Length: 205
Ligand SMILES: Nc1nc2c(ncn2[C@@H]2O[C@H](COP(=O)(O)OP(=O)(O)OP(=O)(O)O)[C@@H](O)[C@H]2O)c(=O)[nH]1
Ligand SMILES: [Zn+2]
Image 1 (cartoon, rainbow, N blue to C red):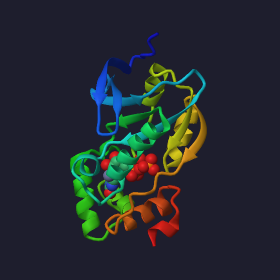
Image 2: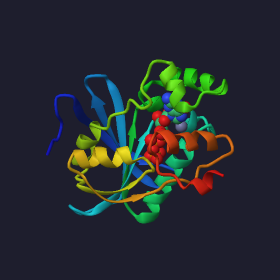
Image 3: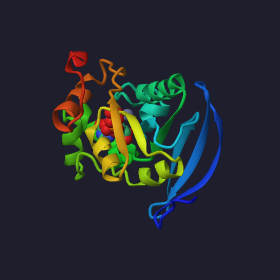
């Protein structure tokens, strides 16, 4: 059954062997922006099973270039490991670089942070809201993967409310907080203070 709508469509899928195990990669297109998003699925589930889920926002610097300015690369790796250990699950990789402002603007925001602004102030200084992401495409992605109930790996309550608003049941939220480094402690503190992230402050001392 197809779940496409006017804006979002599923296009194609293929096997994706990884360092962690054999995933399937599913390609989706946002026809309004021409952005390409992917879902990585692992294993099998029954209708109404609570499926482990990570919604991951693109971070080229953290995911691919080993940056320790943020925790993204660590979270990406940990989420794929958790899914394989559990036996099934899904990672939705959304092309929302820089919380939606794009890579070049994120670099501009980093420069402002080098000069003393925090991550929220830097966005605002550039004329953007602190977080421009929306999660609408997840509805088509999860429907295509036949998922109705999830256990989400996140510290971000906005992801939980976005899923609930699209009719997905979130049976549990697992924190994903093992990527703390001296380089990103202040950034994670700001997200906890200003962006509503749930983070164990003891880990940021
Ligand atoms: N604008 C901006 N974006 C950033 C900055 N640091 C990381 N990002 C982006 O933030 C996004 C990751 O979001 P996070 O806030 O770390 O995490 P989250 O996705 O909200 O929540 P978790 O599920 O708990 O990881 C990625 O798109 C990164 O590129 C920054 O200083 N400024
Ligand atoms: Zn990052």
